[in-house]
Amino acid sequence: AAQAGERSQLYSRLGQEKEEQPLKAEEEEGQPTTEDASPSAEPPAPDVAENGQPTFASPLSNEEDEFRRKGYEADAFAVVAGVDAGETAEMYILDPDIKANPQPWSPDPKPEVGMNDDHNDLLAVAMRDDPADNRYLPGILQGFDLYASDWAHSPVKPRSGGMNMFKVCIDAGTGSWDTAYATGLGELFQSGLCFNEVTEGPCDDADVVIFNQGTVLWGGGHRDKDGAVVLPPKAHPHQVYIYFAHETAGTFGWDLRTPDIMRQFDYLAYFDRSTSALWWPFGPSLRSMLQDYKFFAHPRENRIPGVAWLAVDCLPMRTHVLTEIAAHFPVFSLGSCMNNAQAPLGLPGRGSGDAQFQNLMSNYMFYFALENGGACPGYATEKVWLALTRGSVPIYFGTDDVYDQLPSPDAIIDLKKFKSPRELADRLYAIATDPGAYWEVHKWRYQDPMTWSEGFRTLLRVMSTDIKYGVCHVLQKGETLYPRAQEQASCEGDAQIMGRGVNEWPEQALTAPTAHLLKSCERAEEQCWTFINPEAYGEGVAGAQGR
Image (tube, rainbow, N blue to C red; front, side):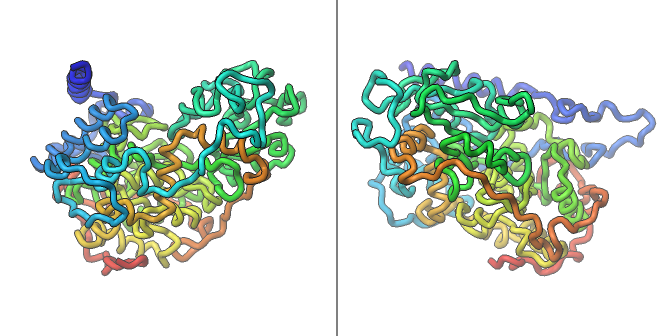
């Protein structure tokens, strides 16, 4: 009865949130709104925004609308289910027969479902049938024995709860961390597993001190009188210093390229799995995959056939490539960098991967996902994963390591595989207009998770596991299994994309999307956006990547 009451309140709150009108994204960014237009400007055509950008009053079919509604209801039920993975997953299974007849989990993959086959999420089915062990995901750790006497690191002094229980101190406090896109980071700040206690300082009495890159890069922390980064001396020889870093050594992460800084830490948590003790990547979790499925299933006919981009940092490598693509195919730059279109009304700002953000951005068929530093070892960020899980095909340039983590090699558009911008445009046009080509890049999500690559399934395991497991495993095994913190490699900046060096593309103005698309109505629907010159696109169905 108590659960039913909580669910009723969630339904009520959910309905209220849907009725509320959020601030316009352009108002939040300080950009002009429609009301700011000059009185002398020519009035727009009925139901068409002045700059050609829709407000996304996107009417889905009755069936799709019902599916979307049930997805939001499942999100609400999942909150009530809490840590109960089986009950959470069951909420996302819509077929009444499958829902009513759970089966013992089997490693034999289930047949893929079509885009309209009751929208059953085969990941939800696997999670429901194996909620505890998740045997459809590879194991990552062999566990640790809290009562073993051979831990590489020991507490400075005995703690309550067992012989291998550590007092952990968060240097500079939890408020100093950049939590944007850091899935599961909050668990690091809570006691449990081998964490007997977590404090925010002083750290003199701590067994483990955890430092974060933001304090060093942006907060100016731990500087001596000459401006050099110098950590406080360890209060005890057995104290362990661990450094968590999410900026790449090739761009903003100059600290990672500085040996005098890195040797002050014992271990590094970073996204380059080959050089760090703790693999701390970007990526989706099992629950975020379930929540985003309703957006991934957004029909092709209800997506704008263009490339979206939302950025603040106008790094020349990215902007020059984007402007070249925009000369051949519609590009909607929605952020403050190279802005040529209004952002969707109510679009949340940086750091948000929530339902509102994913819903609005799923109206775009493609997303420009060039990494800040180019090809940096292990560096595949939220740009790829948020787009991938909502079904906006990522247009990617970055590390080749990403292929080790993708569910399918067909899931992205890799700029390095195209000989020219025209060949890329042909491929994008084919995906936008041909149901078969669209299916090829989306079908992975309608398949049994056992068919996804081992690397992607491992990523899901890591992103869905309490990060303290990794820390505890490092404390137990130490340098017998894990490397000490070390200087990190820079990035490759001379790769060839679309027939030219990535840094060789010239600076030019960003073409408006309406140079390629004729807009006839104010909705994110295929019939509202018509290619002005379709004969300009070749037979790109197979494209550079095949079908």
